[in-house]
Amino acid sequence: MPHAQIGPISVHLPEHVEDNATLKEQFPSWDLDLISEKTGIHQRHIAKPDETAADLAVQACEQLFERENLDRSSIDFVLLCTQTPDYPLPTTACLLQDRLGLRTQCGAIDFNLGCSGFVYGTAMADGLIRTGVAKKVLLVTAETYSKYIDENDRSLRTIFGDAAAAALITSADQPSLWGYQFGSDGSGADMLIVGNGGSRPAEDAIPPRHRKRWKSRLYMDGPSLINFTVEAIPRLVDEILAENGLSDDEIGHYLFHQATWKMLDQLRKRMDISPERLPVDLADVGNTVSCTLPILIDRMRQRDELVRDATNVLVGFGVGLSWGGCLWRDQYRDQS
Image (cartoon, rainbow, N blue to C red; front, side, top):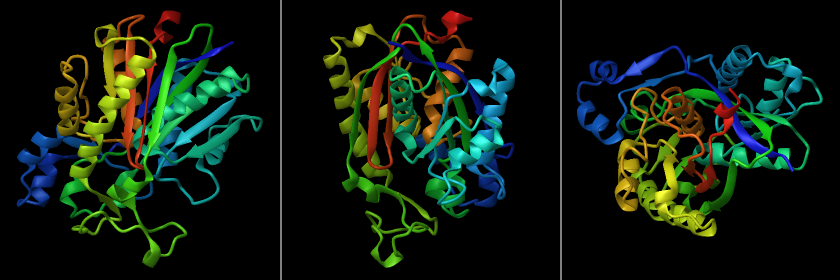
């Protein structure tokens, strides 16, 4: 039976950079030093007003095709994770198929999952490959949360950045992704939500968990999300390790969704993991939602920080509430 592996990854960031110094000039009353100390974020890339998630996704995919000299006709399926689609319908993945010039026999679907999306996406790609439906899957994450954020919103504007990442999930003889576990709790939907723009009337929409302080369409209750994370994620990791007969000292790196420095630092302390094994790498891009894990993997590969044959833990968590994790060995470089 074939198995999925995470192949090459290409990342595209919008050209416009919004750093904390610029925000300080615009809003002198904002304590950017304190904010950056808590978030670990010093700048973000922001899409232009007429630039969409699909536009960023096309750029990431084109870079991947060119760099890897990929035959477009070899792509069997496109999985696109985004919470900022171009249209309510049609699916943005179908638009991506056309813009990339992929064959019409290529499957294409969107899935709206946010921060846990990359882990879920690898699981779906693994299923397509194991069942023989596909040999090469283009797993794309693309987010433009900036379009949901009011410019005066101090709590969100300093955190979220826009980005896209394209990962080629390929068929391999040996398993490199396994031990998947997932979770969801829709009762936490009011922690992170865009309550308008869908088909549900505004008067019947889920209200924010607490008072909405800002005009942004996006609402986030940061403290509640941290509380959820520090309870659910250590338990998830313990279950994954136990189910697969592994101990902490057999794990190379814990690669977690890059939410904020404060959240990841609390997880490190709660789980007693050294900073070297649970990296934080979001200072120059911010929280890019579903793109954080592929960006992190790509950067660690470039720095040669992923040890060959080492078992790592991949975990995504957040909006939904939704979370998921798995075990992963980076075997892609073995073919270079």
